[in-house]
Image (cartoon, rainbow over all chains, first blue to last red; front, side, top):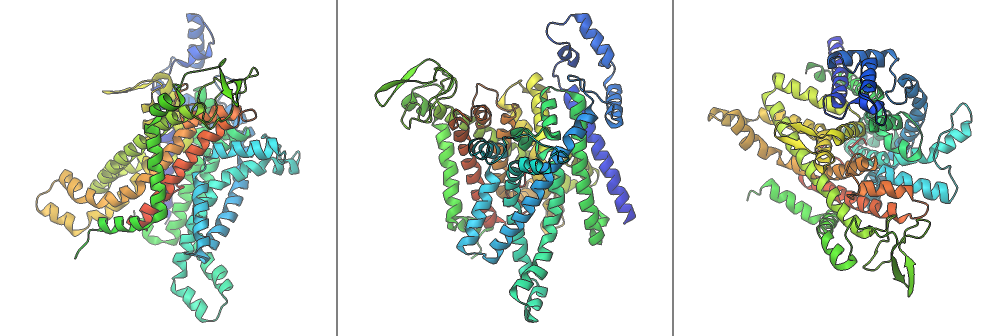
Length: 315
Length: 323
């Protein structure tokens, strides 16, 4: 087991290293214009560009530039090429916003996904089950950015029930914080509710056929007890795994579109804006930050599985 | 009396009326996209990029500005000209919607096809050879997997949109749709390559592969004529869902400004510009969004039916994207 964990952790570091190299390469090897020329602004002189190039080290070989940029990113001293703001501070500023959104949405999608999935499984084959399946399909087919724009316009701007985008820190005004998050969280959760309800439904149906469920019924337990105590508990395992992976992915950039639509100014929106300007340090930092969440979530799941099922450790 | 599994699956699919209706809906949408020039010339009488900021049309016997003096475009007229109204430049929304459908569907279909090709190749080679080949393939997939999907798409899209890409004979011009196709295809390869690899791993140990080897079949022949036919149901099950995901990702990238470049229309960039004028002209965002939802829903419902018919235990499921 220790060997497996060590191997998995080493793999994690290698993947993160590759991600950083690849991100750096995307912005430096592929011709996309000289960052120095873009930074110098309109109609710069050749000597101005030279000066910027020397100052930021763009004239050094790429591997040297990579190592220096990575040192700055990991050490927290990286600075945006364009806004000249410290990247780590910007990420830390956006993090509570992104986390608030992700946690709120994750709670919503788990609760509603499980409720709908359970309902569908209990009524499997009937009209109400088919209706739930169809609603779930509509949910996963709705583009987040479109749904968000519509909700924010009709429920926010027109009806005035909700604020029109923006974010209020929890420490300043807890009620305002929750109030501002209702629509973004709901929007982000819709897709996952559809997906989770489907996964839970088939998981519940699978579990219902197990022997221990028959045993539970045979010893005279009520249907409600069987369902909640025996079936649901075991059906939740795949869902909880997914939950961890998806939460990592949402924090890692899955919330970009929602953040942009509701102007939450989280990490994702920061990344999207930096990417648009080909601003390498913030993009590198946010991508690594995101990849870190995804890889860690995957690694934890793998290790947990290996702990539960010794056969996995071999490969 | 043996019936091929394909025929059985097709018969099951034929009985799934809901799936068929939505499959037909997708075909109708594709036909509508193909008929875009017809609508533009015969019904609406305007080209997709023809602006009309100062023109007037007749509504209920009165002359009305297509775009009012304060810049508000006219809403849906529900007749040939300006069927779905105009946009801020006086362009016909219905015509742009149909031409946008061509771009969105072309990118979605081409990207899904490319994903399927790449994923099948990677999965076959990795699963068949194993060893270091498999290790390299798997870690490449892991790296792509580790990137946040949208972020990778936006990063590649932006980098390529400025400079284009030239690898040997392959040349992607800056701002071309081929860039979106390649970006979307690459992003989704791990989702499909992983299950295919797993399946090849299992198939490799089966007797018929051994038999092929005993008859002197080389790796290429074994992969092409022994393994590939056994992968078709997996590929078929994934296909509609991959198209749905690709269409959605294209819209998301265009929405963020790194997909189809305006003035060329795509549903994503139409929603993007429509959201800005949500207050005065909501039809600009609603119309392309509805088209997008209909297309993706049609593919998802149909794909769900295909999965039930071909391989109910498949790991392919709608909603596996992490946008």
